[in-house]
Every structure is written in C-alpha cells, then in structure tokens.
Length: 112
Length: 116
Image (cartoon, rainbow over all chains, first blue to last red; front, side, top):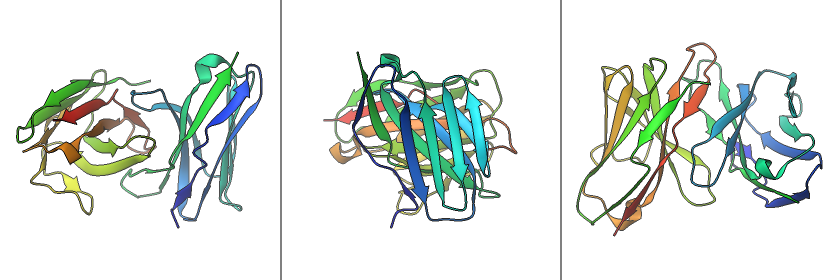
C-alpha cells in the first residue's frame, strides 16, 4: 500500500463547476499538507499549505484536512479552463527533514 | 512565492555522455535543495537532498556515482547525470526550501532529458 493514494483521473468538468480533489494517506505522523499544481512539462507550483487539521481558503481554492480520517481535499470553485493541470497532494512529518511524500497527481481538465 | 530557476529546460544527448543540470534560487538563499525525477503520468520521486557545503544525501536505490550532486553555494545546486543511457531519460525537477520551519518547497520548471 502506498503511503499516499490519489486518483490519477483524468477528471473532466465543465467551466464553472466546483471541483473536488482528494488524497488519502496511511501515515498518521503526517502533519503538513500541501497541494501543488503542475502544468504539462513544468515544475509543480505550490497552491495551498496547511498544518494539521482544518480548512484554509485562498481565493477560489479551499484546502481541507481531516486527520482523523487521514483524508485531505482541495476544492476549486468556479473552475476555469486555465485550471486544467495535474494536481499533486504532498505531505510531510514534523522533523522529517522536509522530505515530502507525493501522491501520483490527479489530471484535471476544465472544458468550455 | 519564491523563484527557483532550472537550466536547461530540455536537453538531448548521446548515450555515454554526461549532462549537467543547474538549479538556482533567485530571490532567496537555500541551504537545502532537493532533486526529483518524474516519469510520465507518475509522481515525483525524491532522488537526493542537496545540502550546501556538504555531501548530498541519496535516497535508497539512487546511484550516487551516476547522479552527482554539488551544492557549492546558497543559491546553486547542480545535478550531473554521468554516462547517460536511454533509461535515464526523464523529467528532472529541483526544489528549494524556503522557510526552515514550515518546510515550504518551491520547485524549478524542470529539465527534460532525452538520451539517444
């Protein structure tokens, strides 16, 4: 079993839809949770960064962490074609030397 | 956010040659940088942790003699793929640590290596 599970997709939604992206994990020591967006043939771009459980909102993006269920989510409101990319979840333990464990990424396509 | 620059973005080389990829933090100093490898439609796999002024720490299964890492300054780390073979063809991405306590990583644009 992988430490971090993420559905690779592809996920196709119409413009304006609310998108829900999710990851589950098995290591209860993970404390820091991140979402990255990666366009084709580009490096990942940090979108959201949260510590422990709770919600965090930034513009159209909301990140949720439920440590009791070992489940994290990224919601995108009013999705745009420019949101089409691969979204990677990543997480790390405290004192883990800043080593991130990544999910496989979910490919999202927002269609006109 | 912080800017990390990678060069070259795309390189094609013949089998047996060596290729150097540079990773620079442009607007901050990074004592720690990381090198990843990514195959198509797969996640990032950490290869090694590059520490300024000391030897890199390699992940299990990564050949340190094949993937030479040098972190000579606080803004530059290099990855040299020695005696490259077609199976080394991949997307190599570096990241730099900005903020020692939070662990926020900022990534370069990636370097696509094709070995003929």
